[in-house]
Length: 244
Image (cartoon, rainbow, N blue to C red; front, side, top):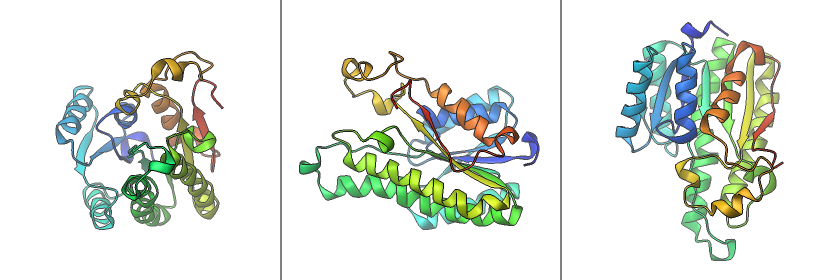
């Protein structure tokens, strides 16, 4: 891995929540961060302004991970602008919760398309570049739901479990080329994605007795991106307050 000031990172779904915290943390280390957003350009602009305010470097890049063409174009744009891509954080995600017996196919498809097909669309061209570079870091944001399952989230749990399987398999494929592939599995984190859940019920399931903070997830991601984590590969690291 190059020194932090020479590195380039792409964080998907970086305009809010966990993605925002990850982008801020990586940028604070001197890494040039591409802040991806799908539709909320104003929120992406706000994080870009915050990164610049801390005298760090970043740029916005809008694309939808469910589109192969947009992902290919985004990777091409990054390489034209920076010449390399050292870190990919696959964080973009959606929820569309329903009891499985009542779940319509579009609810299943949007979650799978965003998490699993989106992983394929973006990670494949990035892997090709990292193989040419002979190095890189890929961090996939999974979930405790992908490890234990959540009632009402069969689609989300299945997608996040799939990300864990993909992480472990890809780590075996490219680990000998100086590229590590790991997953971080957050539990219930204080973000917009958990705002509509029943907090009292949730807290009863968490040994720590509280929700996590996005910055606590970002700290683990930043470690996995570092040179100190060069021998950590194919792992799933939980940030869940002791739930699993």
